[in-house]
Structures are given as structure tokens and as C-alpha cells.
Length: 138
Image (cartoon, rainbow, N blue to C red; front, side):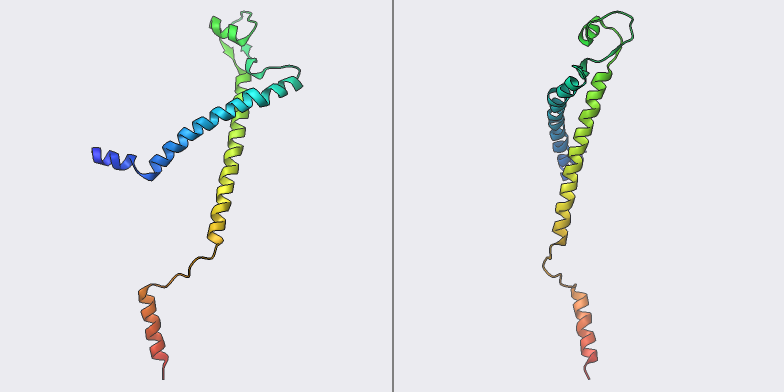
């Protein structure tokens, strides 16, 4: 059973998947920073100084000056600003992944279009062709 697990874990697909997950996690952190620290502040300024990450609806009935205060007090809130940031992050990640896959598909297609070495027919076909040629001779 241990050998089976080792064979499974060391297959190329499993290792590739693990690397992809690790890189995806790091990439998501970069995109989240891009959205939170670079994209959303100018949008907030354009919309009148709104910080999307602090937008929330207070469900508890108390008065809180900020989302941080409401969270600290344990108040029930709907954090729609955080959701907006998550949606924008998803759209950016999805767009970048689309562009990567599109580029890879184009590169793969170019590789397929390149003329390769001529494929020699299998030995059986060669023998059949020789027999056919011999039978055609008068």
C-alpha cells in the first residue's frame, strides 16, 4: 500500500498540480495586493473617497464608526465592500489565466503546424507495398 501511494504521489500530474496550487496561491496574493492597494484606491477617489474594503451593513443595531470597530465588538455585518474587492480580484485572475492559456494554446498550435521529419510507414505497410510493386511487374 505504501508503494502504491508513493507511485500515485510521484506521478507527473500530482506533482504538477501541487506546483500549480502553490504558484496560484502566491499569484493570488499578488493580485489581491494589486486590487486592494493599487486599483481600488483610485476608484474610491473617483467615487468620492470611498474605501471599498470598509463598506458594510450593520445588522446588530449598534453604531460603529468603521468595519474594524464593528468586528471588534462582534457585531453582525454584511461586508459588501470586501465582496466587491474579491469579485474584482477574481476577474483579474480569470483574465490573466485566460491570457496564459490562450498564449499556450497558440504556441502549441504553432508547434503542430511546423513540418516535422517525414513519418516512415510501419514495416508491414512497406512489405505490402513491395509485394504490390512486384505483382505489377510484367
